[in-house]
Length: 466
Ligand code: SF4
Ligand code: SF4
Image 1: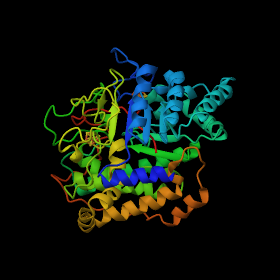
Image 2: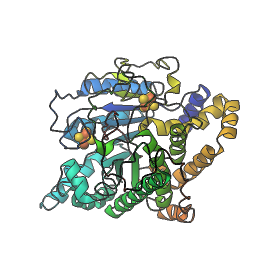
Image 3: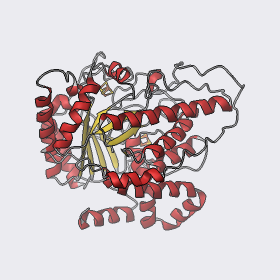
């Protein structure tokens, strides 16, 4: 980090602001079949893409506002490879240091064809010649056949396994990007936990989450990934007033495979925490434990973490009009074209948004929250440390781990020796906290797929991997 960058961060923190982030949806076109997403190829609606002119204006303004991280998403960004490469270069030229993009993996189909290596080498060389820092590949399941069925891309896992060493040879280390779903550890590996459940059922559910995620991380490492990120199940708060939230784009399909009720999510985050701890020596896993802790607390009525910075320091630009929103899920707050001026919080109180668990904005909000308070409101930080010391233990552990991971620089290989040091630190999966029984005890096995809770479905390709 350069001294000027460091000074910029300190100045931001003193103003109670954090380094800015922009997610730009280049297009809502996609060629995948994901059952959970309304942008899948089988959905019929008018598709859009942002042209190079509007994209450059957005990136110019991001540079003027000293936005630090930009993600180019879709739909499927690699359908617009020429534009994507141009914008990755352009974002670098205006001085944005953290540039990210990704793919649903369609380019890795047909590894059996003789031109496969040439094709992948050309792609890797083009991307590696840009200043892109992180390039993610979406992976839905630890079971290859399940992933391929969900995406509609037969043979793609074998292609990814062949492609990763080629990317590494070009100095690009892609991340495995998991959108949490009930098939993540294999078909139907995460059962449905009924609202009225016993402590044993809760324990079974938590264990299924932990083992499925553990299997996923091992699978990603075996495929050749060195970085992984986890996208939490997207659901709008049950406390939100009806109609208060509206996804910016048409991510309104609901599918049981990605829908988790509030009582399930707290246990899911608990299992995810343990699976991450068990695999931190294997992979560079971005998902921060402090954020999981904060969201688990929020879901179980404990102290709240830091408010999400969506609409203040983080923004989402849609592919339909190129307009700005606080995030992908506050579609009623259209702020128009992303301008050159930082107008501050879009509305009073928006600093306190906790309405969803979109990791793209929630994770960096939790990670930067203590630094921001240290410089702007230290007494509040001290009160928070007293109230929730576990958050700060997790936060400190995250910082030390992030350092060992080289801060997830996808242009550098993993430092195996530094990561291995975390094997000894593995907290042998802290024992499951038995939850009090809720409702009537049931002894029957948990159903594998149930009626989905009424949540907004999500697209998992609209975010970054660490
Ligand atoms: S989740 Fe991503 S890859 Fe799948 S249909 Fe949606 S945009 Fe396409
Ligand atoms: S918590 Fe963040 S991402 Fe979620 S709705 Fe609020 S501002 Fe948007």
